[in-house]
Structures are given as C-alpha cells and as structure tokens.
Image 1 (cartoon, helix red, strand yellow):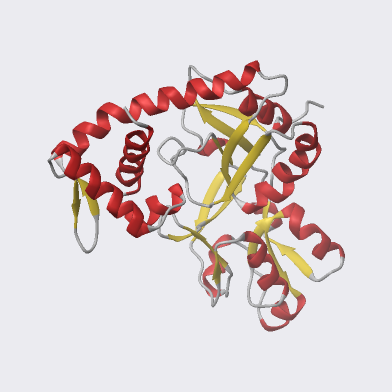
Image 2: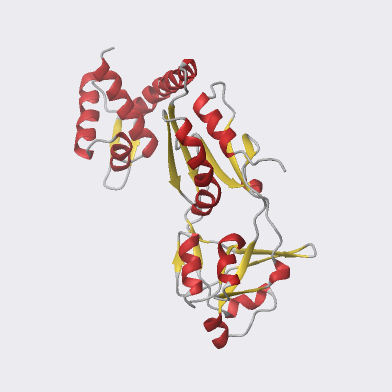
Length: 298
C-alpha cells in the first residue's frame, strides 16, 4: 500500500478515537478542512461511506467501524515495535506522554526530570496537565499520575512521591470576618475556593478523617479553578477557605499569611503513583523515565 494510503488510514483512526474532526485534526497537526477532505477521499476510493457526520457529532458507520477494528491494532503493533527498536540505539530515544495534575508536576515530576533529561537528549517528554481521571489507553498516553487509591488493579503502579496531606487554610483577613470551623460540617456556612474536576463535571468534594470517622463536605464559594495553585492564591487573597496540599501552603503558614484549621481532620494520603498498562512492549525510554521518577527508598 502506498504511504499516502497509510497516512489516510491514520487519519481515519484519529477521527474514530476523537469523535471529532476538530480534535483529531489537532492531534494530527493538520487543518480540519484538510482532514475532512482526506476522509472523503478514502470514502471515494473504497466506494462506501465510513463516517457519519452531524452538526453535533461524528461517528463511524458500520463499514467504517469494521475497517478501524481491523487496521487500528496493526498500527499499534507497528508503533510498539518501532518503540522497541529504539532500545538498540546507543542511547534510548522516543516520546513519553504523561498526564498528571499540576501539583504532581511541580512538586515531583518536573524537579526529577530536570536532573534526568540532560543525560538523555533523544528522549522527549510530553506532559499534559489534567485533573480528570484520564483513560490513558484510550487517550494514548504512556503513563499517568494519580493518588495510590485511585489506580485500577489492571494497571502497574510505581510510587513516585511521599504521603501528602491536604489541609484547610484561610487568611487572617478572612477569619476577621468569619468564625473558625470546628468540624467539616461547619464548612457549609463558609465561602470556599473550589477545584474543578472535569471527569465528574463538577467540583472536588473535600474529604476528611478523624479517629476512623470519614466525612465529606461539598463546599460553595465565589471562585472555582481547575488549578490548585490558583486555589491557593485566591485563599491567600482572602476570598475564602482553601483545601490544598500542605507543602504548597507551608510558606504562607510560616509567614502567617494563612492559618490552618480542622488540623485533626487532615490525615496524610497515599502519595502520587505513576501508572501504566500491562504491555508486552515496554519502551526503553518509558522504562528510564519510570526509574527517574520512582521514589527513592529511605
């Protein structure tokens, strides 16, 4: 088959995965109109409609799904074998795609990669900040980062960081206007700065535990962000209480810009873990990145 035909099939697979010409074009680095034209050319060549287009969605026809079911695994096998061949190089090479939250990236991933990457100039790391519980297989990531208890049993998990405490904090200006909460139930009468979780289409529910008793608080406030660092900044500015990792709040606690409350309701959580699917082919580049991020034993 000509190279052009292979590229066309890759385009069809991208449309099938994204269910959107716009998203697929972005992944492929082509224009939406160019991608649409490519799909029409495939349909003209095979003489059957492969993609059903509406004003709201894009889906495969029965013929299109049949074709993708056959060819997509072949492309995945080829890509896996190409990744494996990089192990024959003197220095491993390739792209490692990781999805993680911004706190994990700033506190653990980036500091470790800064030390690792200069020794491996042919390894490229593509990091996507995402608070959603991304399906790394469907989205074609090599690995993801989550709290230990969030990882499904069909994944391999490697601990990359220590336990983390999320704590409730507020500014001096805020507590001058509002009482100090004594239990998590008191948070319902406070303004709080929320963190959005796209996977659930809503905001993060604050979680607490004390003496084996677990409680959750769905809080409300004037501000919602999809970054924990903006949550912290708004809390320091006095717009409400924030629920943030202790390590990023610590400088503000030391300077007295923030005060911690509900301290006895904030036990440590299992730290960040990097996870990836069970695979026959495990690229040397990914193996090196995993080792670089792995938490050092004390």
